[in-house]
Image (tube, rainbow, N blue to C red; front, side):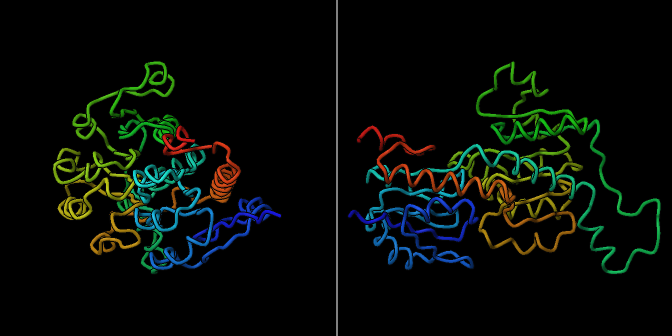
Length: 327
């Protein structure tokens, strides 16, 4: 009798999403408490046929070459934690979980935008610390949304979902992409395409949704913040490294922009210490996809991707398509 495939899962995922994996495979779940170290991955992965990993796991060339798994299933949309070129050279399929994080990530962007512009975190702390002595005309004044402009940088699925919600708040919506969208999509979502410099100069809220690439690394730094309105807010739910964090801190400290809502950071889970001290920043620990519905669906897709490849079938979402042409 053929043995069941062995699958290494680096972090405990929602049980409902893992059910099918346990039915068909021998499963090793590393931990619910922490990520494996590189040494632990090097020790464990060669004993398994497949890996289901997260963005926090660094899957580099050395690991891929020594372990040679049949598939790497990334529990994320992004895959900058994996050396895709090396995986392709070694004919190892890499999969991801696109299309299911859209609403959850758009919602966290709006949660951050609302929280920082209406000073919700400051207000919560104000009440809990017993400083509230009664209603005052100028207490914790925030920024109203209606009639303002939101600029979306990176208008893919998530950016469009953010734009869709902006209309309910009566915001004007402009966007910048590497390529302009079809006019029909622009009309449907009430979008105006502008160059990045104009977006920065005219937007009251700048929301980042671009993928992380070498071109987008530190795309937002001192020069970009100085082009923004002093009353504008930056919202980042994309990747931490699209923003030069130290220069964002300076812009916030010097009043070059009004505030920021951040779900991602350059050196996760390390956060720049000066960000922690700023009252005009709302910080979240990478919660973009953190709903029960989304995280369960992500697990189901990650599991299905791994099972399909182990059966010799094309996965639902393959990152390095070149590997399949070699089969």
